[in-house]
Length: 88
Image (cartoon, rainbow, N blue to C red):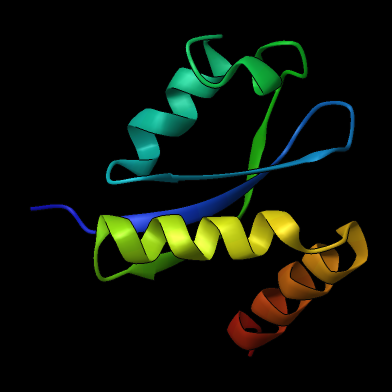
């Protein structure tokens, strides 16, 4: 069973889109093939810029809502913190 993930995409126009999935590769492909969310269809291409695992769909949904409520600057800070975590 695949784990649920919360993800953030950077759209072609520079905006950010937050979503959840249990198959990130397939979902990213769907977004870029205009089969994803209506929001991203008009803002292609999209690039994955953030992801985090969640224990369940409900936990992923709660985290998605929390991230979506953040102002853009806080979302960008979240992305920067994730990058710093993975740099040697």
